[in-house]
Amino acid sequence: QEQLVESGGGLVQAGSSLRLSCVASGRAFSGYAMGWFRQAPGKEREFVAVIKRGGGGSTYYADSVKGRFTISRDNAKNTVDLQMNSLKPEDTAVYYCAADPTLHNIVILSPRYWGQGTQVTVSS
Image (cartoon, rainbow, N blue to C red; front, side, top):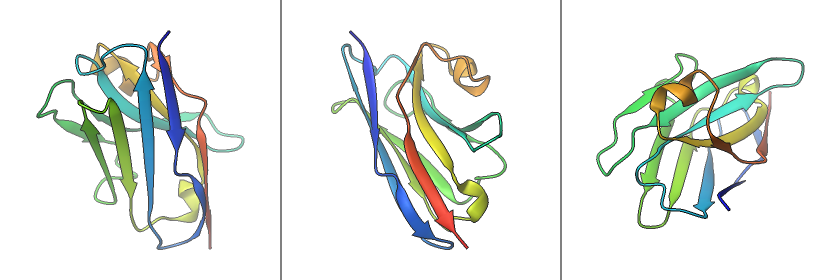
């Protein structure tokens, strides 16, 4: 059974950094695009970042996080990380890890697999 489990969330001050990690299990996800989306209280889900399948996967980011967040993956460990720098209060949300054979499905928030989420709270 495929499963994605996120970790690394927490409460930080604006300007700080956090690193989210997602461990995937149940299959080899090297052939899957992997990414992150988030949902803030009272708001719709929002695409954050995605990395293509394979070893040298290309990356894509939402404009709101470009230049501050970096997504990476380790296919040997079946993990995908999200390094978040220069955090802002508007980054406060539950962050979800996602996986899908098609990158597009993560961008449009319709992935085949996703985790339970990890809370990130940024205070001003």
